[in-house]
Length: 161
Ligand SMILES: CC(C)(COP(=O)(O)OP(=O)(O)OC[C@H]1O[C@@H](n2cnc3c(N)ncnc32)[C@H](O)[C@@H]1OP(=O)(O)O)[C@@H](O)C(=O)NCCC(=O)NCCS
Image (cartoon, rainbow, N blue to C red; front, side):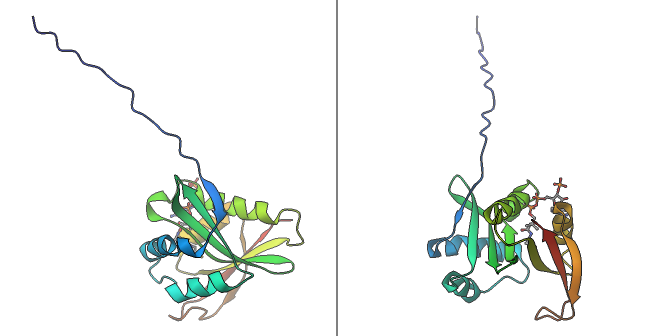
């Protein structure tokens, strides 16, 4: 008699957690790959290099299993924090990582004199505008022809303290 034995194994599901750390210049290549994959008008390499060299700009990375999956560049001033760039790699979007980057940013400035987060977003970037609104950002102003292609910017603000 021929006994076929079927062993049904459970699919292995691995819970991947996200970590946050400050970026170093060694992370630039991974950041650029994501930036160019995600944005129709990506920042240039030089703009990132300048950001790394700017002593006041903070660059935080979200990583999963050592892989960079998102980043957030901010410029804190006396009483608010300006988000210069926030980005989640395409394959990792809409899984809560953007919110986690914002949570991480809020945590960083908890208890400081900075009571708001401010940012500019392209009027055409509907997904990002929805994302910010879902987190509680409100439009406070706009800038005509703010971007090099003549596009207007919306100025959004979130109270954090
Ligand atoms: C904007 C961005 C950072 C959001 O990151 P994300 O990890 O995809 O967002 P989250 O998964 O944390 O989304 C949280 C909420 O934002 C909203 N949201 C996120 N992406 C959205 C989309 N494409 N369309 C509509 N709403 C969206 C939803 O309300 C979502 O909650 P839900 O999943 O319960 O519906 C990411 O889409 C991105 O990197 N975009 C390209 C770069 C960019 O435009 N950056 C902003 C420049 S100003």
